[in-house]
Length: 168
Image 1 (tube, rainbow, N blue to C red):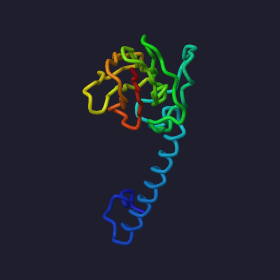
Image 2: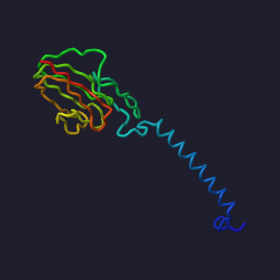
Image 3: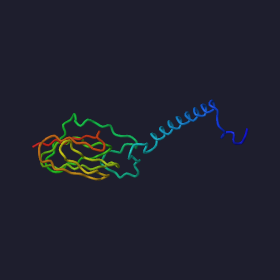
Image 4: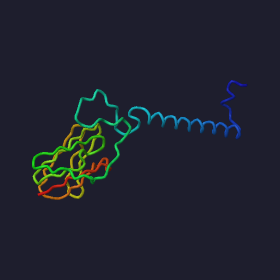
């Protein structure tokens, strides 16, 4: 065989076989990379990375990288306890507002703190109340001055829901 025979023009049958082999190889590589990406730390989920020497905390444990928490309904089957005026803390952990529903009295401040490694927001539907983008350990607070039920979401991750119920 001539040393450069593989670079010479191919006939139609040989070209079809060559393209078929390349297509099959491409499919195998794509499937293999997809399997590796989902099994590796940080497996393709936007903004996630494996926890390294995380400090002890009373917050729930972080989920393995590449997994997102299931978004629950904004309504709770249990009635949360009512909190008198003061400050109530809501954490943002594993793509969830924790607790997702708080019941407070008029004049109470609610403070949200982002404990995730990726940014979130607190955006109330229809009221104009919203936070800036909250980086890790960023916080936002609001004083509720009128009774009502206030639904909110993370505008970056709209599957994240929460509710503030304000009583007089």
